[in-house]
Image (cartoon, rainbow, N blue to C red; front, side):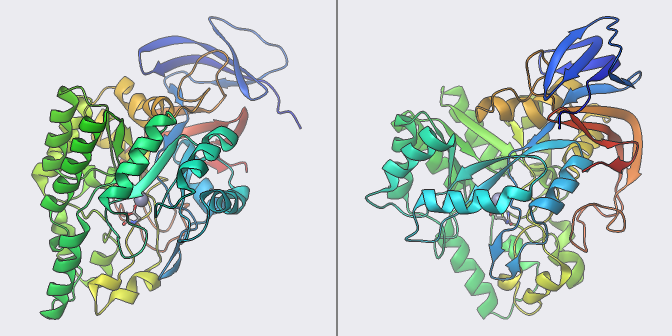
Length: 445
Ligand code: URP
Ligand code: ZN
């Protein structure tokens, strides 16, 4: 059934390139008209006086319902959608990860079916985990027939889904031919595996050894190699979840040389440092993720990289586990499932630590949370408040406040890395494909 038209009055509309004042008419699933003093008799009216109206957030990096050695992750596409909407995110990009021997297309169709109960817009990055005689053709079919725009490869995790550099080169060259983007998890697998096993053999089993076994040099080495391939092969690349100052400096240098090198970081790397690992198991284990949390100078460098545009996108790498799942690594940090939830908090964390503290502007906030993602991943009709664009809209209350807590979050895990943090700014009303899905503290889904 078609939802009623919505008229947003007195909107302070924030796009990446301008802040303007006006009224917005939503009709069907589109932004139909933007103007001054609009009057539409039949529309549902929302007064946005004193609030910002921004494009619905796009999270470039989530793992919902991810099968792992510790079982499936805590958030499936339904609970993940609830959490996303609550925080002002109307679109997510998840991953298709085939098992070796499976065709990329079969894996994509399977994953798309798994995502069928999602309430937000879901897009996919597809991961070649090996190079076979069919991979290039399958990549072409995914683009042509299924609208895939990006392929993700892992330089880490070589025992399972990671690839060697020859495969990386094959993917880069094929993606270039197909006008697609290769996105890369950059960590040197060999040194990490060596360190993990050495620490464990020496009797070091605590979560503290997780960051120690994944040093910043391991990220920098992989980013450096990726930058070298991107330059020599003349291909665009995108590094996911960049966490280190060393990595940022390499990317910055390559960008100066004219390499199309995009970078994503995550709210957790902008919020915490590795001090969180110096804590009792249950507390420390929830921060075990890859790459790990880093030093204060890394955190600062990431903020500067947002300010100067080196980093274009913020993805959460949402990958949530329950305390019971995390406890699998109680006696062996290598067995703690990697990842944490965050899809709900991306906008409020970035607004609190970024906009409210004066580090970034409202326009940068919008670029980082939606516009750049739409541009980089070719999400047509997304990322702007503009006539003809999709009606994925957030009315953002800059005065909203809440204390993040496992007790009231919408995510499904019984822990939250942001527990106790008071955030400023709130997605007060969320419109998704032209329908109000959150308003006045209630979900309508
Ligand atoms: O620790 C993390 N990030 N888990 C999710 C998988 C990945 O590496 O992105
Ligand atoms: Zn990830």
